Length: 104
Image (cartoon, rainbow, N blue to C red; front, side):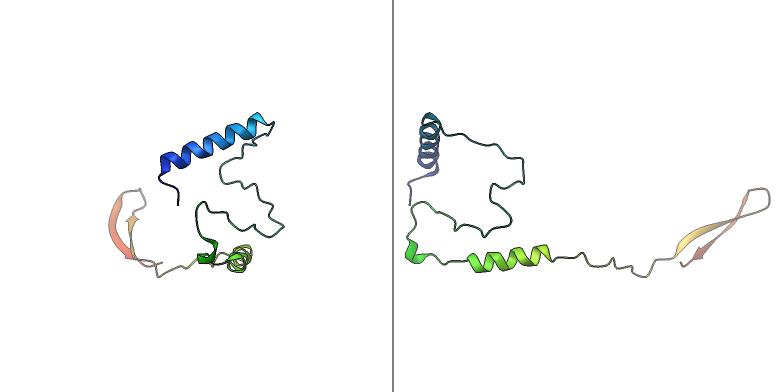
């Protein structure tokens, strides 16, 4: 594995500068947006400095999770028993007479 984050960060910066110097372009994406196409399968993630014999291919698991997300429906709202609330009874002139508790 790479020594530490500072070295890794410098390596990524160096590779990015080399890519731009060769004429490459970097497209900026909005927050939450992905560069991967949604209609195709996801690519296997590339990890720096890991041994591939220790990695498990989780492509099928990820696809199954994505399928569940697209079929996700919000559950209907649950309305519990409402608590009693105070109601004020007024007379004909708009003056409060008394308070009663009402269940809805």
